[in-house]
Image (cartoon, rainbow, N blue to C red):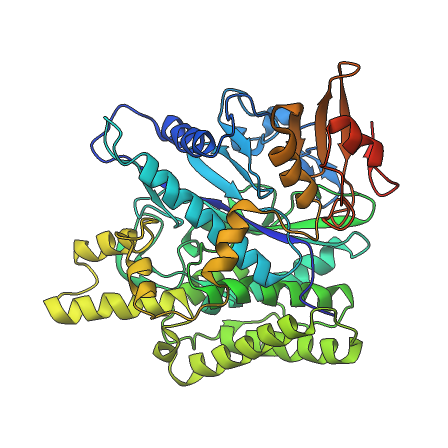
Length: 505
């Protein structure tokens, strides 16, 4: 009945140190994490992530994948402890995810907060790039993008909690056409067609060419449109976590807000069986077709013999979710829900009339307009190699180098969250979720936090010397309101305050 939902964004950043052929991306990513951690007074070498409740091989379809047949990239609960990892004071996690530094935002309850905490990750990476600018081996460069244009792809993943009693088959059926269609809004734009940019051209998204399956557990091989990992990081009896791997890294606030807000609304309507019945005949083929189609008019075949464009599908989903929302009523964040619906309708109208009118709102439109201006000025086509360089430069996190940031300073983009909102998100956790307890524990108790995870904290207690684990199966437990006064003394005082919504072990 609202955009309100537990959600968050994980972003793997591209990392590069030009001219350095010795340092692997994994080692370089570790330097990034440790540099920021040390700068803000956190010890990345001593931080430990608690993997005890993680189950990366559990599938939503009701079975577990055997560890001996799983690809190593799927074993996210078996990470080398020497890898840099730190829980930040804002409740986020900053760590090395294989060959990339990853910023996983704290869990929030609204799309606006999701945008603010995602932007906080950009600020953190920008600060880190500055810290490493004068390294004797050369500056480290960081990019908020999803491909290097040479065959490598890395993710920007979204996470949403939904009710466990919703059948998984309904999730697949309802979300597949939506994810295929929403690219016209959420794509960040890319120079090159094909996984290795084999063909010249421009497409709406950075990720579409890398997807090969409709449904599956993998995230780096045979990437599926619907990921089946069943790891809710919450009470498994009540919640599913939809782990969304099809999205791009967005810079533009409106695109990012719509990515999170539209998806949250669609999930609400899905839970109440209020979505339109649209079944694509060939989802994977359709996903690439949408990304490659700059006219936005490509007809996508449905199994019932009809054809709909991506815009048609998004409009059908908007109509259905808006009707559902009006019927339900009782929205505690009504202003934010209205904001998402208003942007959704306005953007769809703009895409039908003149996509380039949305350069202030959508990443792919803004990037395409800049690329076309360059092509006109230099009388070149999409095969000019300088365009690929500009594509990479667009996502550079440095304020004085990144093209997005250059145009944003010039007032070319619509802002949804303020600089003050973002600055606060860098240092303060969300007040209305368990991220508050996580972040404030890091701030208040430092070395007395033995380890942390999304749904638990392990503390060292001095008298007597031991370890105490607090489980957080309810994402709204551990909020600022609930934990008032818990951080005024020591860890023993905090543990003594724990009530029935939390579990002490």
